[in-house]
Image (cartoon, rainbow, N blue to C red; front, side, top):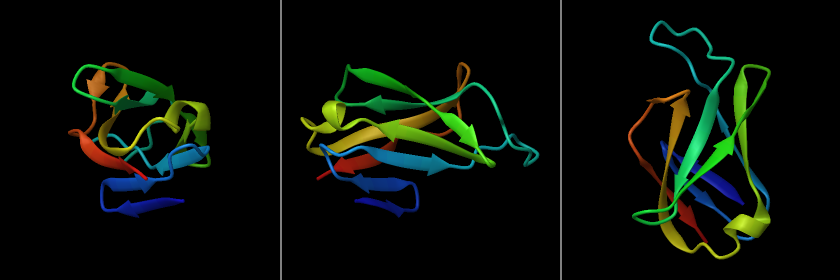
Length: 94
């Protein structure tokens, strides 16, 4: 299960899930390379998940083995190279 509510995401822990995002520059042109998702699992741990660009959409797959131990609220953000494109947003593992 994967649900979006604006920028918040609710996802099943322990299942392979793919987060989709459309990423554009400041003039609305698609960014086609160098984009990744950073998952903040607690105050100090950060995990980088490389994206795949397919048909104008970035896909970030959260592997089941990694998420099986996660419960409750964590945080994510999307980056392009070294630039953070958004503030940390909540992601809930259920």
